[in-house]
Image (cartoon, rainbow, N blue to C red; front, side):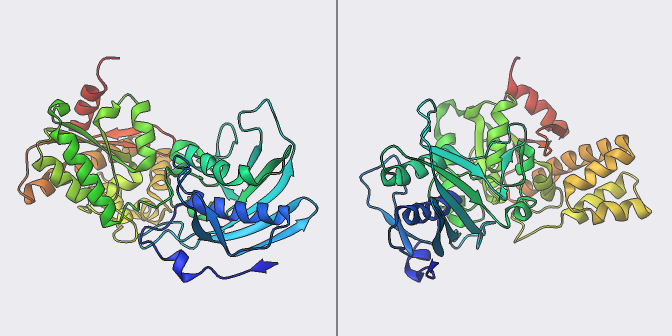
Length: 388
């Protein structure tokens, strides 16, 4: 096996680091090189922007690569997302490559992409969950290496992917068994990174400067929420993706003249606001179990049942178990969570001297169902959806 440690210069030269599709593409390129009989190189030259083919290649480190026998090879990379807080930090990526017959009838007939252990698939179709950018990145960097008349089969494996996926909301969007191979660009935009906050604030300022903005805004928590919101009828023009820096974005929105503001997010994330936590990255603040049990106690839950709620692995699991035991109580608790989010957010804005906008909250679960709306959230959701 050929192996080499990633060079410090290439793995840390940029603060933002690279997204998961880049590390998969680097390992895939190294594996294809082994299929071709090329010498192993510890830095794979990748074109990171498929829309700009003239741009020079960037060196992306891989850990190792080796042939596995006739027509098969394996390569390994290790994710380095940069200085921000990122779930994929240190994630080992395996890519097995093999020659594959061309399929002239298929749009991507040159490539068969398979999900191995730890890689997310769509629950219904069982197809690998992969973004358009990830496919374009693979095509841009691998197709030129293929011999005439040959296609390629890639099997992607994330050995720790299944475990890490439990800390995401992938299942809320029908993605199961591992981490989705998603991403819309090469460089990581970490939701806990101050640079990401600045970009969000700049986008918000541009939105509010538009005379047609109307003073309405939907703050969507995370990429998955941004995908779900328009499917539920919320107009794309009102949506602004917000990472974990909710507090500063809320203050800027209120100060900028937003009159009606809807918080739209996964219940396991937004519940932090009910506890007054307005920076929601799990590395910096959590307290979800404590918030959940405090609100449950206010609804009358006590004793062993309250202890079981506190000991659940996730907010999702806790609410699901409570719903089985006492559906009416679970419904009241969800409504209390949403109402408390609205109240705590209004109080947060008042403390920062920018009280004014009507604030609503809408919470969905891992099955893509809206599970609770606060009093104002119900009003704003109906208003923003418009006539059906």
